[in-house]
Image (cartoon, rainbow, N blue to C red; front, side, top):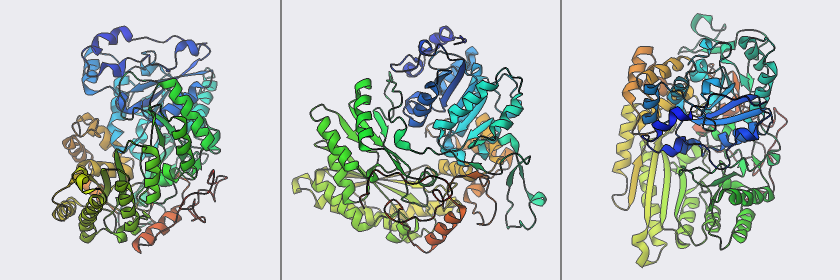
Length: 635
């Protein structure tokens, strides 16, 4: 039966009057689960996104897991988000802990605390969340009766920088895994099984990584013959009954999963304030810098009938007038054209808009954009990533200049007037000529755009360019490659500026300091956990927010821990050496990643297997899974 917990609303209410955006903390939104719906629930879980409400509430993964856990009558799952710095300070001054949004229950009173790991710059936010909750930061300090703290998400594929802070980290897709673990822990309650023994048993559930059951060693303790130029850590289980590698979980028959998780209508505007429907999962384009394109394989499409039905129901129960068809590569869906035509016909005259997060860099992508926009033509976003064909082949982008110029010409002839292009600096194999090529390409694209509109509208053409520093990620062909050193990076930025159009095109580049932190945490070992903790103690939090990022806090932490931020970010791994995440099985074979890296050195491309034959990544070869496509894809 439902067990009443501490309700701290009365203590919180006076603080909210002085908080920025108090609607972040009100709860009671339309669609949220209420205690009256969960009268039979006796196991309490909370899903946490470690950032402010406006970002976390828009996160589809949290929404899916919240819905999945609440689908079981025995589990009541709530939500929590990290309060902004003003309320966090007020909470500490008043001695109030972080609470859930549905019932204002302290997080320390829950059975299951799940924290998503969306990106590396959220690492210090995880510690801020635990500290505000009154939950011990280190799993080793938690006692019987404390919540079990679980992590999951993209960063879980290299879990070592987070290892000490979690009782377990879930590898892969969590729809089935989260509920399986919650129900298993519920079954063990009252049986006398110790916390330590429960974790040992959980380690045998596929996809569950229990860091305390694995040791890290290096130097003279390394296996015989493992001699390399640089020191390398090895992660191995502490006992024979613990799996040597943790295999990721994956959802099969994706179309059968509910396409419309429980919809919650917020009081305040979200970052992506619209209905979002995941139309497919996975991408096999094979961009060699892209982690998501590796870890979410194989490609699994929902049917057009499922998608259109989910959108109709979602719009009806939320009141939104815009829907986003989300995935890593929505325009690759084999029936995307049919979906858009059906949606346009169904919602004609209603004011409902349809959007797709990104477009293919070809005329087909623009034709889809035309179907989406109708008469409303906002900005078009394309991502060539590199300024020369040679470097685009190195990264396996699969985009030619002809594709790009055809897309731009088609778009501006059809009525678009604003264009945004994305590029990266510091890609493996990059030269000054490649960087100068970004400026040259942008100049020619801008000219093509202006030449494609009537003379009296040439002044309406707007173009912006965003350039980010390459961050090497685990489980990609570039996982062995380091970042540019600071001096070379500044030189490349100067090359870019010197060769960039003087008028008509706005240029923006990302803060390289945050990119170095990302690189450290994306490929670092367990020693980086202390770096994160020290940085947090020096005041680092909300590192993804430019106005909050404090590189001095990270430098102070680096000095105290001996983890050199720049050397770690720039480090290149030897291909045969052990990697900090080798005990995590992503499904993609390491031999495939090596082959792709070798092909990158030769500027050779690899085709997308959803348009042709298998490319041997291993995901479908080693498991009973395969690409699930509704029809033939449009090349």
